[in-house]
Length: 331
Image (cartoon, rainbow, N blue to C red; front, top):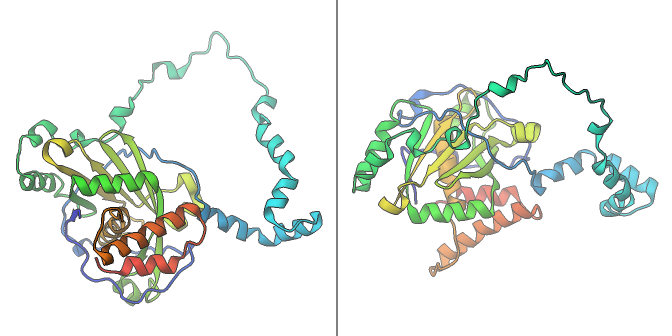
């Protein structure tokens, strides 16, 4: 299991199931809740899929349910699939139509200077933050003890209280990355803390759903974005993540360790303690593999978590209550 520094101490026990579009309650950060132990990751490249999973597409159907039912009655069809089939030719024609072709096109004159000609091109490699963006990878790799590498990694990021820092063994990382490739999207429950309840900023036992997205922009770099589900529903591919995690695997072969650093965006209603809790919950589901587990209890637990990932991916039968119940269970 990955080592996450200063794990959250207390989580409210009684959680209430919320709909996926539960309202995000914003509150002020409290820098005293954790000690500074990591750094902000600037210029993160959001290179992730904009595909909306089936579980979110269901909300669109619910939103226009009455209109769809009325249209089904008018066309004398019984199901939504039959209604789609009725309009199939129109759908294909609209998708194939090129609206840009109808716009007038004017060829630029010879005297026009193209402003883009002198703009320097930024390579993808320079835009992506790799391990060498934070430390001298060659010097770091000279340390044979993982403990020494971990201490240097934490010291490198010790100035920012709104960030995360961790180390993972290679086996854990490879298992998480394999699951992330198979399940690049998921949701995680975030329980409201007692301080927010007492301050009137949240309902007792309330839960906020957070959307998870994985991306793999470079061989030794893996990204994980955590976004409010409400934010994602409202803005989809333009949604702004509140927490960004970057896994660096450059030292996985030579030293058997993977380094993680993360950023919690200021002013988005998520504290570093919230982000730590989400990282621990993320591990529960993505570090789960029922294959090869002989102990009955551990195997059953792994199967439950894999089933939730499968159900969310398919969009059929996914139950938020089951997700919250599993997230509450201690490992």
